[in-house]
Length: 439
Image (cartoon, rainbow, N blue to C red; front, top):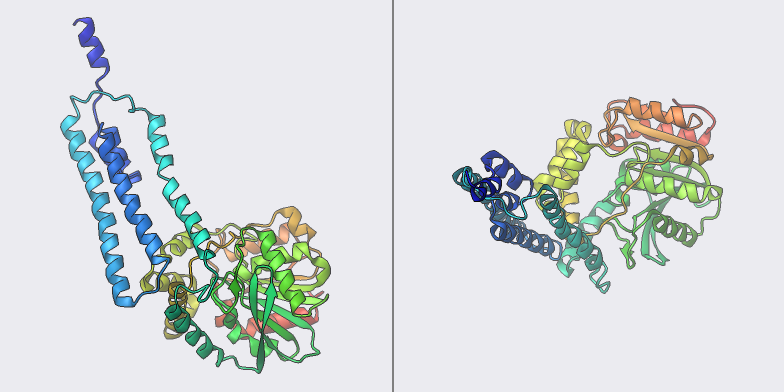
Protein backbone atom coordinates (compact mmCIF):
# COMPACT_ATOMS: atom_id res chain seq x y z
CA UNK A 1 0.00 0.00 0.00
CA UNK A 2 1.55 3.29 -1.14
CA UNK A 3 1.50 6.64 0.73
CA UNK A 4 -1.41 8.01 -1.32
CA UNK A 5 -3.53 4.96 -0.50
CA UNK A 6 -2.70 5.29 3.21
CA UNK A 7 -3.62 9.00 3.24
CA UNK A 8 -6.83 8.30 1.31
CA UNK A 9 -7.80 5.54 3.76
CA UNK A 10 -7.12 7.82 6.74
CA UNK A 11 -9.63 10.31 5.32
CA UNK A 12 -12.33 7.63 5.13
CA UNK A 13 -14.59 6.77 8.03
CA UNK A 14 -17.70 4.63 7.98
CA UNK A 15 -21.00 6.50 8.39
CA UNK A 16 -23.44 5.02 10.89
CA UNK A 17 -27.06 5.24 9.69
CA UNK A 18 -28.59 5.12 13.17
CA UNK A 19 -26.28 7.89 14.36
CA UNK A 20 -27.17 10.02 11.32
CA UNK A 21 -30.90 9.54 12.02
CA UNK A 22 -30.40 10.33 15.72
CA UNK A 23 -28.54 13.56 14.88
CA UNK A 24 -31.41 14.64 12.61
CA UNK A 25 -33.82 13.84 15.42
CA UNK A 26 -31.87 16.09 17.79
CA UNK A 27 -31.57 18.94 15.32
CA UNK A 28 -33.05 19.30 11.86
CA UNK A 29 -30.32 18.94 9.21
CA UNK A 30 -27.57 17.77 11.58
CA UNK A 31 -27.69 14.25 10.12
CA UNK A 32 -27.20 15.70 6.64
CA UNK A 33 -24.16 17.63 7.91
CA UNK A 34 -22.78 14.39 9.38
CA UNK A 35 -23.23 12.77 5.94
CA UNK A 36 -21.38 15.56 4.16
CA UNK A 37 -24.51 17.31 2.82
CA UNK A 38 -23.92 20.61 4.59
CA UNK A 39 -25.98 22.78 2.24
CA UNK A 40 -28.92 20.40 2.25
CA UNK A 41 -28.86 20.29 6.05
CA UNK A 42 -28.65 24.08 6.28
CA UNK A 43 -31.53 24.49 3.82
CA UNK A 44 -33.72 22.05 5.75
CA UNK A 45 -33.03 23.94 8.93
CA UNK A 46 -33.78 27.33 7.41
CA UNK A 47 -37.01 25.95 5.97
CA UNK A 48 -38.01 24.45 9.31
CA UNK A 49 -37.33 27.58 11.36
CA UNK A 50 -38.87 29.87 8.74
CA UNK A 51 -42.08 27.85 9.01
CA UNK A 52 -41.87 27.90 12.80
CA UNK A 53 -41.24 31.66 13.03
CA UNK A 54 -44.03 32.42 10.55
CA UNK A 55 -46.40 30.18 12.48
CA UNK A 56 -45.46 31.72 15.84
CA UNK A 57 -45.58 35.29 14.63
CA UNK A 58 -48.91 34.83 12.86
CA UNK A 59 -50.64 33.10 15.75
CA UNK A 60 -49.36 35.77 18.15
CA UNK A 61 -50.59 38.73 16.14
CA UNK A 62 -54.21 38.03 15.22
CA UNK A 63 -57.41 36.63 16.63
CA UNK A 64 -59.11 34.21 14.27
CA UNK A 65 -62.03 31.81 14.35
CA UNK A 66 -61.79 28.27 15.66
CA UNK A 67 -62.36 26.45 12.33
CA UNK A 68 -59.54 28.33 10.61
CA UNK A 69 -57.51 28.00 13.78
CA UNK A 70 -57.68 24.20 13.61
CA UNK A 71 -56.95 24.04 9.86
CA UNK A 72 -53.95 26.34 10.28
CA UNK A 73 -52.66 24.28 13.21
CA UNK A 74 -53.02 21.00 11.28
CA UNK A 75 -51.28 22.35 8.17
CA UNK A 76 -48.28 23.79 10.04
CA UNK A 77 -47.99 20.73 12.27
CA UNK A 78 -48.05 18.60 9.13
CA UNK A 79 -45.26 20.67 7.57
CA UNK A 80 -43.14 20.36 10.74
CA UNK A 81 -43.61 16.58 10.85
CA UNK A 82 -42.94 16.07 7.14
CA UNK A 83 -39.70 18.07 7.35
CA UNK A 84 -38.59 16.14 10.42
CA UNK A 85 -39.47 12.74 8.94
CA UNK A 86 -37.71 13.60 5.68
CA UNK A 87 -34.58 14.79 7.49
CA UNK A 88 -34.39 11.64 9.63
CA UNK A 89 -35.24 9.23 6.80
CA UNK A 90 -33.01 10.83 4.17
CA UNK A 91 -30.01 11.01 6.52
CA UNK A 92 -30.46 7.32 7.42
CA UNK A 93 -30.72 6.14 3.79
CA UNK A 94 -27.84 8.31 2.53
CA UNK A 95 -25.60 7.23 5.43
CA UNK A 96 -26.38 3.57 4.72
CA UNK A 97 -25.46 4.01 1.07
CA UNK A 98 -22.24 5.92 1.81
CA UNK A 99 -21.24 3.95 4.90
CA UNK A 100 -18.15 2.29 3.35
CA UNK A 101 -17.03 4.99 0.92
CA UNK A 102 -17.44 8.24 2.87
CA UNK A 103 -14.56 10.69 2.85
CA UNK A 104 -14.41 12.95 5.90
CA UNK A 105 -15.12 16.64 5.32
CA UNK A 106 -13.44 19.51 7.11
CA UNK A 107 -16.61 20.13 9.11
CA UNK A 108 -16.95 16.53 10.33
CA UNK A 109 -15.86 17.54 13.83
CA UNK A 110 -17.83 17.16 17.07
CA UNK A 111 -17.28 20.80 18.04
CA UNK A 112 -18.68 21.96 14.68
CA UNK A 113 -21.76 19.78 15.23
CA UNK A 114 -22.17 21.44 18.62
CA UNK A 115 -21.75 24.86 17.03
CA UNK A 116 -24.42 23.93 14.46
CA UNK A 117 -26.84 23.07 17.29
CA UNK A 118 -26.07 26.30 19.17
CA UNK A 119 -26.69 28.35 16.02
CA UNK A 120 -30.12 26.73 15.78
CA UNK A 121 -31.04 28.07 19.20
CA UNK A 122 -30.95 31.61 17.81
CA UNK A 123 -34.42 31.51 16.12
CA UNK A 124 -36.40 30.73 19.32
CA UNK A 125 -34.35 33.34 21.21
CA UNK A 126 -35.06 35.80 18.42
CA UNK A 127 -38.74 34.90 18.54
CA UNK A 128 -38.99 35.52 22.28
CA UNK A 129 -37.53 38.99 21.79
CA UNK A 130 -39.91 39.67 18.90
CA UNK A 131 -42.83 38.76 21.16
CA UNK A 132 -41.52 40.99 23.94
CA UNK A 133 -41.19 43.95 21.61
CA UNK A 134 -44.40 43.30 19.70
CA UNK A 135 -46.57 43.06 22.81
CA UNK A 136 -45.85 46.73 23.61
CA UNK A 137 -45.04 48.02 20.14
CA UNK A 138 -48.43 49.64 19.77
CA UNK A 139 -50.24 50.64 22.98
CA UNK A 140 -53.12 52.37 21.25
CA UNK A 141 -56.54 50.68 21.46
CA UNK A 142 -57.26 47.77 21.32
CA UNK A 143 -54.01 47.10 23.30
CA UNK A 144 -53.44 44.74 25.11
CA UNK A 145 -55.79 42.77 22.88
CA UNK A 146 -54.92 41.41 19.44
CA UNK A 147 -57.83 43.16 17.72
CA UNK A 148 -61.10 44.97 18.35
CA UNK A 149 -62.95 41.72 17.84
CA UNK A 150 -60.73 40.00 20.41
CA UNK A 151 -61.32 42.84 22.87
CA UNK A 152 -65.09 42.61 22.46
CA UNK A 153 -65.13 38.83 22.82
CA UNK A 154 -62.98 38.79 25.96
CA UNK A 155 -64.58 41.70 27.80
CA UNK A 156 -68.02 40.26 27.15
CA UNK A 157 -66.89 37.02 28.78
CA UNK A 158 -65.14 38.86 31.64
CA UNK A 159 -68.13 41.07 32.44
CA UNK A 160 -70.52 38.14 32.28
CA UNK A 161 -68.43 36.27 34.81
CA UNK A 162 -68.13 39.38 37.00
CA UNK A 163 -71.89 39.22 37.53
CA UNK A 164 -71.26 36.01 39.50
CA UNK A 165 -69.21 37.91 42.10
CA UNK A 166 -71.31 37.00 45.16
CA UNK A 167 -70.88 40.20 47.18
CA UNK A 168 -71.27 43.90 46.50
CA UNK A 169 -68.21 45.42 44.86
CA UNK A 170 -66.82 48.49 43.19
CA UNK A 171 -64.00 48.73 40.67
CA UNK A 172 -61.16 51.19 40.32
CA UNK A 173 -58.49 51.83 37.73
CA UNK A 174 -55.17 52.82 39.32
CA UNK A 175 -52.57 54.65 37.24
CA UNK A 176 -48.99 53.40 37.58
CA UNK A 177 -45.79 53.97 35.62
CA UNK A 178 -46.36 50.55 34.01
CA UNK A 179 -49.96 51.16 32.95
CA UNK A 180 -53.43 51.00 34.47
CA UNK A 181 -54.29 48.43 37.15
CA UNK A 182 -57.87 47.22 37.50
CA UNK A 183 -58.97 46.41 41.07
CA UNK A 184 -62.25 44.96 42.38
CA UNK A 185 -63.01 46.15 45.93
CA UNK A 186 -65.41 44.47 48.37
CA UNK A 187 -66.12 44.41 52.10
CA UNK A 188 -66.66 47.03 54.85
CA UNK A 189 -64.89 50.32 54.17
CA UNK A 190 -63.37 50.59 57.64
CA UNK A 191 -62.28 46.95 57.83
CA UNK A 192 -58.58 45.92 57.68
CA UNK A 193 -57.29 45.65 54.09
CA UNK A 194 -56.69 42.28 52.43
CA UNK A 195 -54.98 42.40 49.02
CA UNK A 196 -55.67 39.38 46.76
CA UNK A 197 -53.16 38.39 44.07
CA UNK A 198 -54.46 35.77 41.62
CA UNK A 199 -52.56 33.06 39.77
CA UNK A 200 -51.44 33.58 36.22
CA UNK A 201 -52.23 33.86 33.46
CA UNK A 202 -55.67 34.71 34.81
CA UNK A 203 -57.45 37.57 36.57
CA UNK A 204 -59.03 38.64 39.86
CA UNK A 205 -62.30 36.79 39.18
CA UNK A 206 -60.39 33.69 40.24
CA UNK A 207 -61.39 34.63 43.82
CA UNK A 208 -65.14 34.12 43.21
CA UNK A 209 -65.04 30.92 45.28
CA UNK A 210 -63.51 32.68 48.30
CA UNK A 211 -64.61 36.29 48.34
CA UNK A 212 -67.90 35.88 50.22
CA UNK A 213 -66.15 34.67 53.38
CA UNK A 214 -63.11 36.94 53.07
CA UNK A 215 -65.11 40.13 52.52
CA UNK A 216 -67.20 39.78 55.67
CA UNK A 217 -64.54 41.22 57.98
CA UNK A 218 -61.94 42.55 55.54
CA UNK A 219 -61.81 45.24 52.90
CA UNK A 220 -60.64 43.12 49.98
CA UNK A 221 -58.73 44.43 46.97
CA UNK A 222 -58.71 41.82 44.19
CA UNK A 223 -56.08 42.99 41.71
CA UNK A 224 -55.88 42.13 38.02
CA UNK A 225 -52.13 41.57 37.73
CA UNK A 226 -50.89 43.88 35.00
CA UNK A 227 -49.24 41.04 33.05
CA UNK A 228 -52.32 38.80 33.35
CA UNK A 229 -55.52 38.44 31.35
CA UNK A 230 -57.90 40.86 33.03
CA UNK A 231 -58.87 44.50 32.67
CA UNK A 232 -55.46 45.91 33.59
CA UNK A 233 -53.57 47.54 30.70
CA UNK A 234 -49.77 47.41 30.60
CA UNK A 235 -47.97 50.17 28.71
CA UNK A 236 -44.40 49.42 29.76
CA UNK A 237 -42.43 46.19 29.70
CA UNK A 238 -41.85 44.41 32.99
CA UNK A 239 -38.76 42.24 32.76
CA UNK A 240 -37.65 41.61 36.34
CA UNK A 241 -39.05 41.00 39.80
CA UNK A 242 -38.10 44.44 41.10
CA UNK A 243 -40.30 46.04 38.42
CA UNK A 244 -43.26 43.89 39.47
CA UNK A 245 -42.65 45.01 43.06
CA UNK A 246 -42.54 48.65 41.96
CA UNK A 247 -45.79 48.22 39.98
CA UNK A 248 -47.52 46.65 42.99
CA UNK A 249 -46.26 49.34 45.35
CA UNK A 250 -47.59 52.05 43.03
CA UNK A 251 -50.92 50.22 42.81
CA UNK A 252 -51.29 49.92 46.60
CA UNK A 253 -50.34 53.56 47.05
CA UNK A 254 -52.86 54.56 44.39
CA UNK A 255 -55.53 52.64 46.32
CA UNK A 256 -54.79 54.79 49.36
CA UNK A 257 -53.41 51.85 51.36
CA UNK A 258 -50.84 52.81 53.93
CA UNK A 259 -49.22 50.34 56.34
CA UNK A 260 -50.74 47.26 58.06
CA UNK A 261 -51.65 45.58 54.75
CA UNK A 262 -52.61 41.91 54.71
CA UNK A 263 -51.80 40.08 51.47
CA UNK A 264 -52.78 36.73 49.99
CA UNK A 265 -51.29 35.37 46.78
CA UNK A 266 -52.05 32.24 44.77
CA UNK A 267 -49.52 30.58 42.46
CA UNK A 268 -47.83 33.32 40.36
CA UNK A 269 -49.54 35.92 42.54
CA UNK A 270 -48.03 34.17 45.56
CA UNK A 271 -44.54 34.56 44.15
CA UNK A 272 -45.15 38.27 43.47
CA UNK A 273 -46.45 38.61 47.04
CA UNK A 274 -43.26 37.04 48.41
CA UNK A 275 -41.14 39.45 46.37
CA UNK A 276 -43.16 42.43 47.60
CA UNK A 277 -42.86 41.24 51.19
CA UNK A 278 -39.08 41.02 50.95
CA UNK A 279 -38.92 44.61 49.68
CA UNK A 280 -41.61 46.20 51.90
CA UNK A 281 -41.92 44.31 55.17
CA UNK A 282 -42.67 47.59 56.94
CA UNK A 283 -45.90 47.90 54.91
CA UNK A 284 -47.17 44.38 55.53
CA UNK A 285 -48.93 42.89 58.56
CA UNK A 286 -49.62 39.28 57.53
CA UNK A 287 -48.99 37.17 54.45
CA UNK A 288 -50.68 34.07 53.02
CA UNK A 289 -48.92 32.20 50.22
CA UNK A 290 -51.09 29.58 48.51
CA UNK A 291 -48.97 27.15 46.45
CA UNK A 292 -46.79 30.01 45.18
CA UNK A 293 -45.10 29.41 41.81
CA UNK A 294 -41.47 28.34 42.45
CA UNK A 295 -40.74 30.32 45.68
CA UNK A 296 -40.25 27.16 47.79
CA UNK A 297 -39.18 24.64 45.15
CA UNK A 298 -38.35 24.60 41.40
CA UNK A 299 -41.22 23.94 39.02
CA UNK A 300 -41.58 20.26 38.10
CA UNK A 301 -40.61 18.94 34.68
CA UNK A 302 -44.16 17.67 34.20
CA UNK A 303 -45.54 21.15 34.83
CA UNK A 304 -43.08 22.62 32.34
CA UNK A 305 -44.05 20.01 29.72
CA UNK A 306 -47.79 20.66 30.04
CA UNK A 307 -47.30 24.44 30.22
CA UNK A 308 -45.21 24.48 27.03
CA UNK A 309 -47.74 22.33 25.16
CA UNK A 310 -50.57 24.62 26.32
CA UNK A 311 -49.00 27.43 24.29
CA UNK A 312 -50.14 25.62 21.13
CA UNK A 313 -53.23 27.59 20.08
CA UNK A 314 -55.83 24.88 20.37
CA UNK A 315 -58.24 24.22 23.25
CA UNK A 316 -57.22 20.56 23.44
CA UNK A 317 -53.82 21.47 24.89
CA UNK A 318 -55.24 24.08 27.26
CA UNK A 319 -57.77 21.54 28.50
CA UNK A 320 -55.14 18.83 28.95
CA UNK A 321 -52.99 21.18 31.04
CA UNK A 322 -55.81 22.25 33.35
CA UNK A 323 -57.31 18.76 33.75
CA UNK A 324 -53.84 17.52 34.72
CA UNK A 325 -53.05 20.43 37.05
CA UNK A 326 -56.51 20.61 38.64
CA UNK A 327 -57.18 16.87 38.81
CA UNK A 328 -59.27 17.00 41.99
CA UNK A 329 -61.50 19.72 40.57
CA UNK A 330 -61.77 17.73 37.32
CA UNK A 331 -62.97 14.70 39.26
CA UNK A 332 -65.54 16.69 41.28
CA UNK A 333 -66.91 18.96 38.54
CA UNK A 334 -65.49 18.20 35.12
CA UNK A 335 -68.09 20.35 33.34
CA UNK A 336 -67.16 23.43 35.36
CA UNK A 337 -63.47 22.84 34.71
CA UNK A 338 -64.22 22.54 30.99
CA UNK A 339 -65.85 25.97 31.20
CA UNK A 340 -62.81 27.42 32.97
CA UNK A 341 -60.59 25.78 30.38
CA UNK A 342 -62.58 27.44 27.59
CA UNK A 343 -62.20 30.80 29.34
CA UNK A 344 -58.44 30.29 29.64
CA UNK A 345 -58.12 29.31 25.99
CA UNK A 346 -60.21 32.30 24.88
CA UNK A 347 -58.04 34.65 26.94
CA UNK A 348 -54.90 33.27 25.31
CA UNK A 349 -56.38 33.85 21.86
CA UNK A 350 -57.57 37.37 22.67
CA UNK A 351 -54.52 38.91 24.36
CA UNK A 352 -51.22 39.79 22.74
CA UNK A 353 -48.55 37.33 23.88
CA UNK A 354 -46.26 38.47 26.67
CA UNK A 355 -43.16 37.01 28.28
CA UNK A 356 -43.84 37.06 32.03
CA UNK A 357 -41.06 37.36 34.57
CA UNK A 358 -40.05 33.83 35.53
CA UNK A 359 -40.75 33.03 39.18
CA UNK A 360 -37.74 32.13 41.30
CA UNK A 361 -37.06 30.04 44.39
CA UNK A 362 -36.31 32.11 47.47
CA UNK A 363 -32.92 31.49 49.04
CA UNK A 364 -32.55 30.32 52.62
CA UNK A 365 -31.41 33.81 53.60
CA UNK A 366 -34.47 35.36 51.94
CA UNK A 367 -36.80 33.03 53.84
CA UNK A 368 -35.07 33.92 57.10
CA UNK A 369 -35.32 37.59 56.24
CA UNK A 370 -39.14 37.46 56.23
CA UNK A 371 -40.19 38.31 59.78
CA UNK A 372 -43.86 39.18 59.29
CA UNK A 373 -46.38 36.43 60.18
CA UNK A 374 -46.66 34.17 57.12
CA UNK A 375 -48.95 31.23 56.38
CA UNK A 376 -48.02 28.76 53.65
CA UNK A 377 -50.87 26.63 52.24
CA UNK A 378 -50.48 23.72 49.85
CA UNK A 379 -52.83 20.98 48.62
CA UNK A 380 -51.74 17.43 49.38
CA UNK A 381 -51.88 16.59 45.64
CA UNK A 382 -49.93 19.66 44.43
CA UNK A 383 -48.09 19.07 41.12
CA UNK A 384 -46.26 22.30 40.32
CA UNK A 385 -43.21 21.49 42.43
CA UNK A 386 -40.49 18.93 41.85
CA UNK A 387 -41.22 17.56 45.34
CA UNK A 388 -44.36 16.30 47.04
CA UNK A 389 -46.45 18.57 49.25
CA UNK A 390 -45.10 16.88 52.38
CA UNK A 391 -41.47 17.20 51.25
CA UNK A 392 -42.03 20.84 50.33
CA UNK A 393 -43.49 21.65 53.74
CA UNK A 394 -40.77 19.71 55.57
CA UNK A 395 -38.06 21.67 53.76
CA UNK A 396 -39.78 24.97 54.51
CA UNK A 397 -40.16 24.03 58.18
CA UNK A 398 -36.47 23.19 58.29
CA UNK A 399 -35.13 26.39 56.75
CA UNK A 400 -37.79 28.77 58.12
CA UNK A 401 -39.42 27.25 61.23
CA UNK A 402 -41.05 30.57 62.10
CA UNK A 403 -43.37 30.23 59.08
CA UNK A 404 -46.73 28.53 59.60
CA UNK A 405 -47.61 25.76 57.17
CA UNK A 406 -50.63 23.62 56.44
CA UNK A 407 -51.39 20.88 53.94
CA UNK A 408 -54.97 20.96 52.63
CA UNK A 409 -56.36 17.43 52.08
CA UNK A 410 -58.21 16.31 48.95
CA UNK A 411 -56.84 19.06 46.72
CA UNK A 412 -53.89 20.10 44.60
CA UNK A 413 -53.33 23.40 42.82
CA UNK A 414 -57.12 23.73 42.86
CA UNK A 415 -57.33 24.01 46.67
CA UNK A 416 -59.09 27.40 46.57
CA UNK A 417 -61.84 25.81 44.45
CA UNK A 418 -62.12 22.26 45.76
CA UNK A 419 -61.56 23.09 49.43
CA UNK A 420 -62.76 26.71 49.41
CA UNK A 421 -64.49 26.49 52.79
CA UNK A 422 -61.46 24.95 54.53
CA UNK A 423 -59.03 27.36 52.88
CA UNK A 424 -61.18 30.35 53.80
CA UNK A 425 -61.49 29.21 57.42
CA UNK A 426 -57.76 28.55 57.72
CA UNK A 427 -56.89 31.94 56.24
CA UNK A 428 -59.33 33.86 58.45
CA UNK A 429 -58.11 32.09 61.59
CA UNK A 430 -54.54 32.98 60.70
CA UNK A 431 -55.42 36.61 60.05
CA UNK A 432 -57.15 36.82 63.42
CA UNK A 433 -54.64 34.74 65.43
CA UNK A 434 -51.31 34.80 63.55
CA UNK A 435 -49.32 33.44 66.51
CA UNK A 436 -51.13 30.10 66.53
CA UNK A 437 -49.11 27.51 64.61
CA UNK A 438 -51.13 25.61 62.00
CA UNK A 439 -48.59 22.98 60.96
